[in-house]
Length: 206
Ligand code: ATP
Ligand code: MG
Image (cartoon, rainbow, N blue to C red; front, top):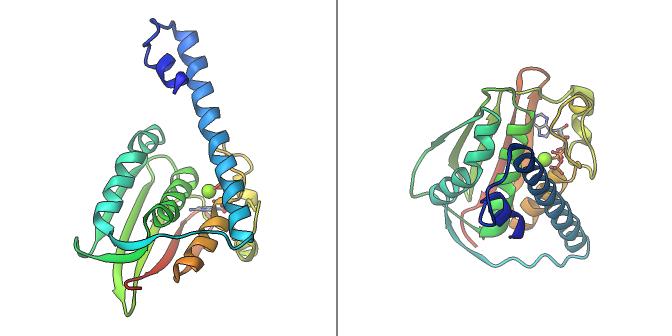
């Protein structure tokens, strides 16, 4: 909060150098908070203490709220998020915060590992008792021989080594655990230098 007030210049005008410093502090702090939350989530998952408060969630509303939240971040990466949600009334049954976390992580990956001017295409369709979501990017892809390790803790593919945007390799491990806990499934198809599509299913009812 204090850093935000500094960045907003609530305490006085900042020069260019000070602005850059405050921005760096803001980015690093957000990243640290994210890492701490990831570690806490992993501890909860491994101790079976993930408490879910489930309710009916309107998918369309949830996506629009996520896109609003990620708008600045996507813009900084020249990334366009396009949606093709089949029906604006589609709902799933789950913990809103956790479902949001799953989608946000997948979109964050698509932005980080997509190329400049990358376009993420999200779609959904009803398959029996579940809604199936796909997140398709045209980014760096995942090398075939590494694909079986992707959901492991701390795993990062070798083709991310030279990228400016780092990560700790915890996102997908958490996502997979959350999806399992929600009663759904997750898998992907990927080709190096062509792109990746993640598929997630979430139950429609209790
Ligand atoms: P963080 O903990 O911040 O999410 P991360 O993004 O490196 O770090 P994961 O989200 O778990 O970790 O992803 C693991 C690895 O899978 C990534 O490092 C990357 O190599 C690969 N990966 C994930 N999503 C994609 C994608 N859409 N395109 C290409 N590679 C991907
Ligand atoms: Mg990630």
